[in-house]
Length: 95
Image (cartoon, rainbow, N blue to C red; front, side, top):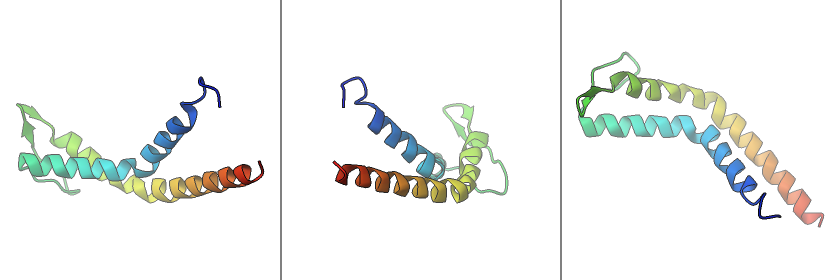
């Protein structure tokens, strides 16, 4: 692999991980921030959450509700990752 293309595999792996686990990471982040700030957070509505003078309640709620995308991203990401792993192993054994 040339030096110029050496970033390709780690970059693709990072994109795969963000696609697959991004909604879960967003939920964990929003829950941690809401817990730290002492704010209420649930899917039922947007509640005020003032941190450093800024209301971030809507953003926290958006990240929290975005977790529902995991119903799509987790299965498709894991299938794509498994297929890529099989492809890589087959190519590697053919050398």
